[in-house]
Image (cartoon, rainbow, N blue to C red; front, top):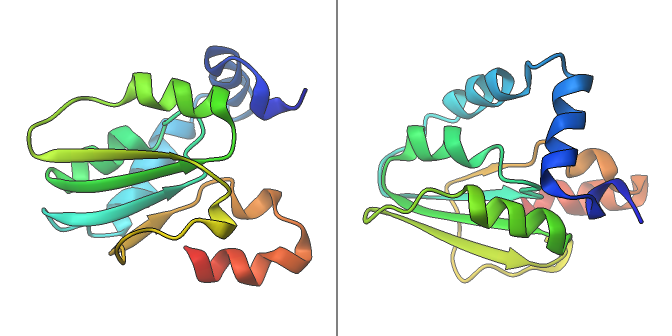
Length: 130
């Protein structure tokens, strides 16, 4: 069992403890810097429990978010966290982000922890995928 196989609530609690509660504010600031445009396409690579979905949703407003994660437990929690909207489509994909071919090119990508867990020889490929 790895950290990413934990129940999503436990994982989120650990992240909260390790970041002193600053995780959500940090993600809001980072996503705001992407200058997302309504109707855009965004990739949340390694979406985990979906903590980045709220700030992406708030900035994007309408469009499509591809949320990819390799952990079924994390992705399940992300699906539950997503807010339904008539103007915003969520596409959840259980896959390794290094080998997932999206059906269309995205306008922006978020990869909060994904690149940090790659083996050094995979890093360049990971940056290319995002």
